[in-house]
Length: 323
Image 1 (cartoon, rainbow, N blue to C red):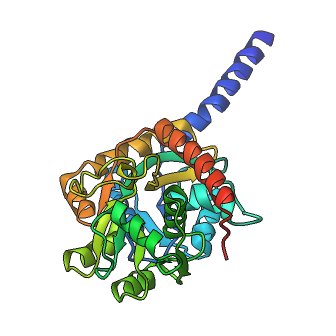
Image 2: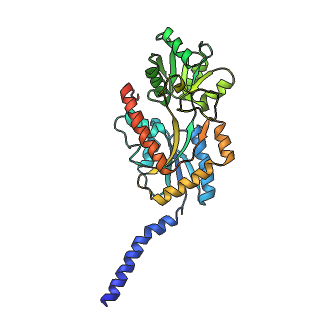
Image 3: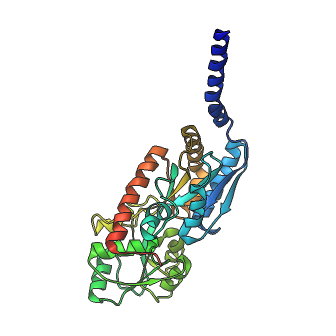
């Protein structure tokens, strides 16, 4: 009898241990929600919908994009941080939501690194430095000379206090030893429009917003802010070619809540990378100035930790706060 009890107890323990594995193996058994923490229509939203379509086909369950905008991406990101780490609630976030906001806002409802599972670094957004055609500068060096010759007369636009536009320009001021006037707007669109109109002279912004105006001659492209030249704009120099050490890369990434099972993270990473390699997807996003990537969760985790430390220190050093 004791032997039978021991066998029954051992079987019960085996089944209990196997249950989570079996549950994960069956994933997904219901629709998945993909949160975008910004309004519909932007490049992040477009990329999320491309992923949604591809994942729906490969996983056999609907992947539904849900826009939860507000508070510079904090509302949607908080929703995912507090969700169950079961693979049914995911996020397409960015370097701003996960590396900058922690330093910009007090009493943050989440930690951009600790409260999320990094799944894949999705893309780099070509971040451009553009000027109004009236600015007599054809390159970064000439622009620096122009600003030095016109102290406090050159204004740069941004999508708001603490935005990536603001950080890019503030970092440029520090590296070049110049001072410009900051004109913050309520969003990227009005910042671009006022630079096109000549009310501000320079703008650091995603190519998705600036390149159409560069192509029509309404803006001049001086450089990109990444460490290396973009394969999408090989003729455009980097700011670092004039100011060594200057670098600001704007990326998008896929996240889940902290504590997601490794097998789900790996499965999602593999499926996402397959979608990002499709020629039609590469072209569609490339035409918008978005360079798609192929990374492991571990590689993305390293980028996340590095940039959270880098931009957190930089924001505090420059004294930048969110309004």
